Image (cartoon, rainbow, N blue to C red; front, side):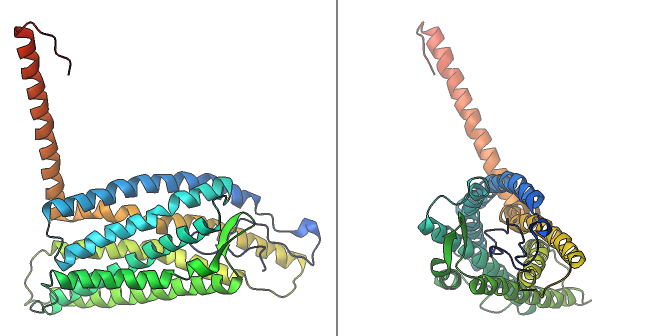
Length: 349
């Protein structure tokens, strides 16, 4: 089925009619209801995601900077993952605006926003892979130097992550353009390459997660294993499960849409109607699965707080500190008020 545009990357969506140029006009596949669904749901939910992501990830960064040693490899990864989620989040307001007004921000902005979005996407995935591999080494070989890596080595590891993510995302500057008031891939070839690149990256991530955690669970289930609660392992495992559950449906849908976008042989009217209905369902699945996938940008900090014991303790400590500070300010205000009254002077606070 040939579409009038190729917008199957994470930043855009197919919001056109499916036009069968050899068929009468009344046999076109009308996507009006799908377009309205996306135009209503996507801007609202993207806006909510932005607010939650900004609040949660900034809070994680503040807690790490205030209470933790950010030079340790684990904390460095978590800090960079929060920054990565913020990069990913930075693109969402633009896509929400695009749904309402179309792309009116110029081609340079289109390229930059796409680049930042992909940097956030790939850096998040790479960091989760490295965090999983790090915990694998910590459990399987706890005496390894990698486990206690700090300082310059952790900085180098993070620099490499951002360098690779930047390199992978850089084609956005070349192969992204504004076409018919939409920020899209320059041609169908690069659009398909972008889809399959994401699919391959997701499969690679899944293989690493499944292998590492299956090995870790086997080790921990041994009778001779030390039965201690590894909260860091639980945290990272939860993050990777969220990543897998969130991105698996989305990768499946965009792969199916890539097949749907290819030229199909001529068919009769009954077959076209069936293809149209299937295409409409796929479009609805795209909107829903994309919202599920993009939710990882604000779910990660939620799990930092509610799964990671250290983060919960640090958050409580920080809230208590704010409470004591506010209490001290109120007590000071009360003393100043009493002093001003006894001295017969009026003091405005």
